Length: 116
Image 1 (cartoon, rainbow, N blue to C red):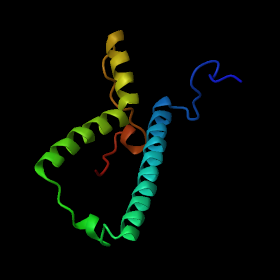
Image 2: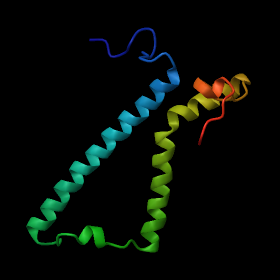
Image 3: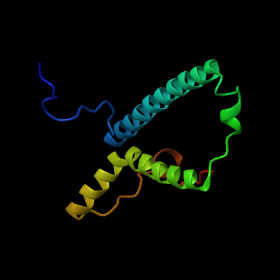
């Protein structure tokens, strides 16, 4: 059975950037759900075994060392999340392209002021 798709990555929207963002959201959602399930299982086991009181996790304060470790892990997570866009930026830089401004649509493109 083939494990690769012939012709490259499929796109579902007219703008490939939308596909990339959708991919990021789906991957992130998958990771979040997995973590929620694992945390719920861990809490249930710990409460059942009597080594964790209900609500104890919410009241926990991390040590400065733990905070520093988590900050590093958070940076790695964010880098991983945005890797698909970073690759695109690096490829554009390698080709010598300048960053393109976002295309304006709707009333903003017609010269009308929009609220932000």
